[in-house]
Image (cartoon, rainbow, N blue to C red; front, top):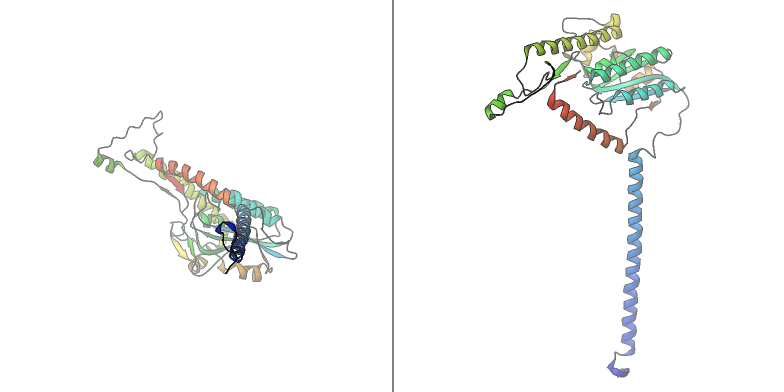
Length: 319
């Protein structure tokens, strides 16, 4: 018979087994907690590094390249103050590209349907300024899918324009868009109460009937911006441009057609231009990348202001 302790307690060997099992379970829990803490720290560390990279505080370009290089600046998307294709960012990138002593030539690769004539004009004039300052460093425009309106406005400043045969090029025109809600308001029985201190302060108000005089003024304004656009294209392309009645009508053409019309110079890509034209196969990207915080702040502020502006008036754009 098993030896019993006083008070009818469990036999000694059973107590020992229970204690061992309890200690084992406790040790297992401690190990599990340690591993849990380890993986949590590892996860938080990984997340912290990702956030730092997104914020632009770590990472970035590799070490400085030695020898001739092709400097690349990307212009992608709608050209506007709230996008990454805005004049401030693009011009800073262009300045850095021209300033680099290893730069043998600059390529601005464009994939844009257009946008703000002001932003496009600022990029155009900065290209011209930098080319005059760095006369031995050429700048070429390389078109991806589309280079229309404001995108072509910028491309016209380049020494030469290279396209893919299927690229979309052109749309040399200006538009002012908006909406008219007067018919809908009448059906809903809504009355517009607009009080102004100037006869034209409610210019292009979408909730008021269109004023013929104000429409004529808007057309004059657009014509003036269009003529500025035409002049820049003519100055940039010179004798290469083969004008026709459709050239400045707002139509678009394929890359192959644009070469025939003198809107572009030849077929080519970033790699072919770097290799065969600039003679520097090494491509170094100078395109500035906004960090996560900047993008969120800028998009939030811009979307709020754009919503107000678009709700109250038309907007002029090169699209």
